[in-house]
Amino acid sequence: MNAYLHESLLTVISISIGLLYLLGIIAAIDAIFRARSSQSAIAWSLSLFMFPLIALPLYQFFSSRKFTAYLQSRRSGDAEIHQLVEKLGREMTPGVKASLEPASSPGFANSTQATCWLLNPLAPRIT
Image (cartoon, rainbow, N blue to C red; front, side, top):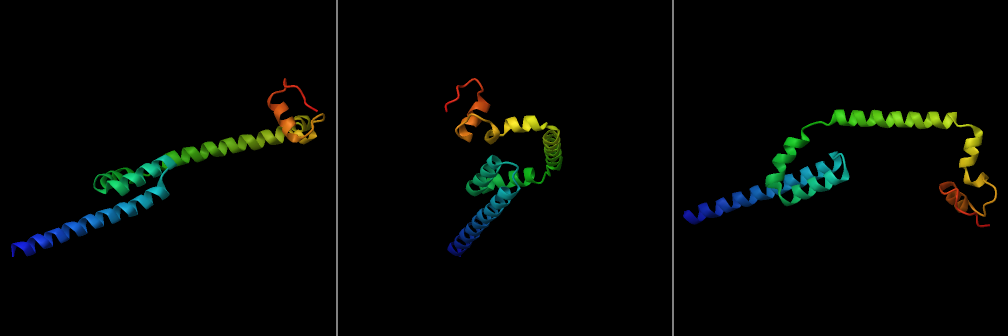
């Protein structure tokens, strides 16, 4: 009777540990898709794979928070930058646009030399 109880207890513990690791794998996949950065995705997935008993409660606590304010501020900042770039592109005079295009710069053998000269105008021209 005692051996049967011991055997069934080991079976329950083994199944519990297996389910814990299965939940850790599922949570790791979720962490990969929901993470804000690649570093956090790697950190969460590794910890959930290796230490699910410790990492699962922490992940459930921290992942339940929706970082919508962060995402909204990030997207609005990106939108402002894109609007400024488009406005700057429309307001550029044709002379400025022409000076920024390497192919239209005379006296260069190829576009690589023109690009190098744009980056360092004091460099000598090699023809």
